[in-house]
Length: 145
Image 1 (tube, rainbow, N blue to C red):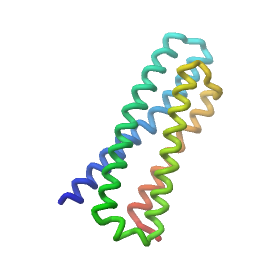
Image 2: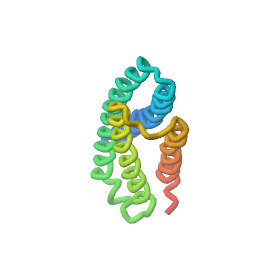
Image 3: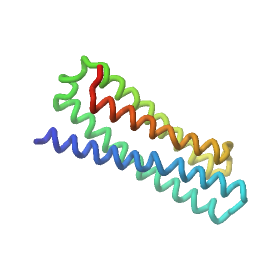
């Protein structure tokens, strides 16, 4: 019962983190467009929204990691540690955490008015979490290797 509760909470907080992962780079698209048009009021609003969303995303990520670690400790590690899919999934999660940290650096650059990328860059940058999500879910569902 405890294992299933932790698994459910792990999924809930994964979803909340991914919501932030999907929305934060979308804000960058709009922010970059506002910079190109010198819309100062919109720029100030985006800085606040990005900072708050980054904090909320950290909460989702942190709780997802805690419940994921509890799942591993409760028995998932002993069941699956010899299988490559788990190592691949954990590697992808680490890479996604790197992406999230890079988003924090982008937040700071936007807040200082030092953004160096166009809205087109951020449109492509916004698609990366989708690819990670697809592969991670497929690995966790099918456990292919």
